[in-house]
Image (cartoon, rainbow, N blue to C red):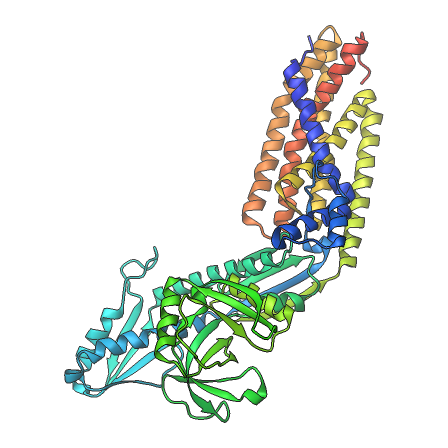
Length: 554
């Protein structure tokens, strides 16, 4: 007999109702989105405006509020392709080696003579010694700075190449270390860009590495590419330097180990600073918008224990001297140290607006980019274009759905109507699943849903045709229905498993639009098999229990 256990019936109905309930908020997208935004804003700031309170109350809290995130091509937003200047990291790494190299060589000054740093290319550190005859000994000492490269491809290699010629010791990064540094720089850049974008409250950004030194950034819902560049394009590299003197212009002589940087305003002129920073932004643990003693916008900060100790020691030893707060190679403030600053906290003052102070605090909290970026490609996709895409997708889905329903009803009568109802449940399950997992719907994703609509009835066609065949062989419609589902199962599983594997490969190896298509296809395959095998069978069972027909009209 055609039977489905009660527990299985309850489970099937419950899953269908859950799918419909989680998909329903997408029918009221603007209202639910405003409700979610208001809740997030309250969690972040602890305050809520009148408009946000009204938006929060516009959707009941006891109802599901998950939404399908709209991709860049549907919502509009900004697209950037950035190139990371990985060479800057080489230069910074070699400059940081100078104090330690000077200390080591100075221990043998009686043998190798005086030690001084001389001008060198960005990717090298050159040190001149007083006794050219002792160059071999100087190189031997300098090689103690090297350490093994900690990567699988760099096993057995050191991170530094140290050579000597005449009276000059040359230090450069090895090829293995350059490759490892490039990888670390790109990973760090990706993470920091992601932190900055997430802190701005955008939804489901696409941030991925492309090639050796490029990053693709797509952020739905942001106003323009210029706004996105302002958010992530700033290096936000904060350092604190000792002020050596003032300079008339950027071309004034500074000396080895000194740099000349401009002030925040033209009238501030130029500062001569010690090239080595006292403390850097890497040692910040927190940064928040604040106000100074006069009520003007400022940024308060706090160092970790290492940074706090270095900052406290410096201020204790240089009372009455100016020190410079440098942000992205610009002196934004150069106050005079009035007293020992202990505790590792302070405040950055400057000519900030409230928004500038807020943005600076956000950037400092996210961390400094390890290197600068050049934007090779930028474009803004307007929300109108995205809305046109949504409307076109709706029309395609409605036309496809209507055509499939008409075909199924004309071909299989009442059983075709059951398949059409299961198809509607299938679409609800697709959107409900995407809402629950926070998936992003793109224009290719809509194509995946339309394809799912066409594929969803394939299993029903196999089952119904099998039932037709069994009606010619067995007695009674109940047995024919039961055998139809049993014998069609292997063909249904085979067809959908192969499609599922293909979609999975697209998801793993694809990117951007390809992955968006794969996501909806994977979900659609799972839900279509569920509705075809279980939902239609449950509907047929309910109908059969009530009518007990003597024959089947297929």
